[in-house]
Length: 215
Image 1 (tube, rainbow, N blue to C red):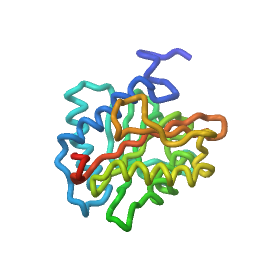
Image 2 (cartoon, rainbow, N blue to C red):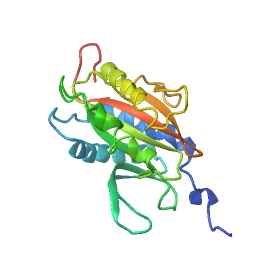
Image 3 (cartoon, one colour):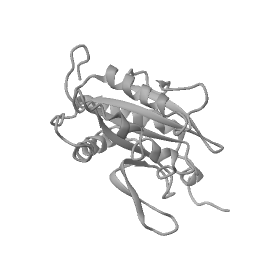
Image 4 (cartoon, rainbow, N blue to C red):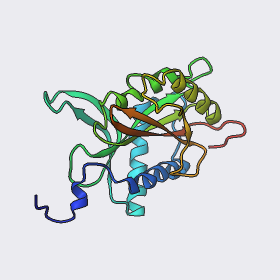
């Protein structure tokens, strides 16, 4: 089939070389982002954060588009099956993108919220194929409401280990530091979904300051 223009813009997968740019953009932009209230929910946080991401993306001249709350529909019925919190698109294919699902963590001492992070509307969105079906990577953003990133990472890591079978973790693996961005708040997990290898990048962003771990 003849393709006019840059053939890479019609690729079946989101370009791997752009993933580090996305991760770094999120981490860097968060540093200057005006932090929300500790009582705010994911959607208003993500909407406002998206505006800062767009401005910084334009400043860096990065070759993708950023959309908040992007509707994902069933390709057969056309019915909406979910709304991707933050979606990065590059090229012309409608279903080729990099998606972030966002969840609050450590809402208070009795609500770590890890069940939501690893559950049906969290990481399982990627495993079940609700988001990023036939793609090879996606991301989770954990808004750490009390700012204690080390404890948030430890709790999520434990929840992932406990749900390793459902999450289709690659045997013998767990949450590990990411080689994409040298930042302790960025980790990754590897999954085997049928014959497809899938990577989830986990970014932990502090909402408020925590002793020993400033935002």
